[in-house]
Image (tube, rainbow, N blue to C red):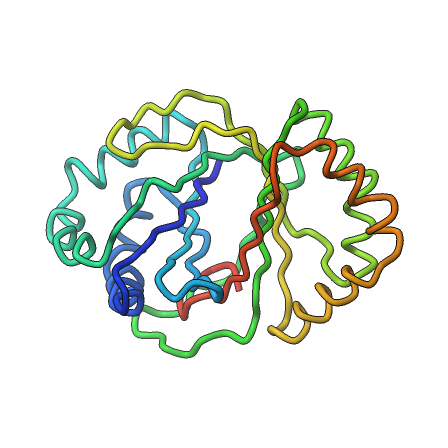
Length: 235
């Protein structure tokens, strides 16, 4: 399972938080059983920090969060500086892979703690708010939406559904919404823009797929254009 977390920050403090997060809050979380999958700048909101972390299961999540936030020295030390940048941290979704093979596959070595070089790669994350059973929507997505995305240069690298397991760590609220989230990775921002332009121009998308999609949603999709930080594993 993964958490997709979107933090609203005080104006001008995002780089302060990223420097603190990448320098002090990656390995210290992983040491107690989490996996920090990705950290991003939201390119459409200079005061938004987006990140994801993974857990083997809900029991492991509870143990890891308690070890880090309640018993851990790292958060106790750095929490005041981190919180000083934050306005709202409650925008969090708990997700499970839509299928046995649709979770993130993140490999390789994370850049070192002093890394500053920003990758050229970009990510597109799309959140669909569902008005239909999530398993039914996952089948529709694979049959009708995924082929158009792939044909326009954005084959999804991961797809997730809401994890319905009750939140067992009350200090960190989870949004209880029925969602489907897919992610695409691009070599650079131009490739992502090209995909969005091709999708906008695709007749099959407008005349067939998008109307069918809208019937299954409770509201407009949320689209996140994301730039990985220097230490993000997903890049």
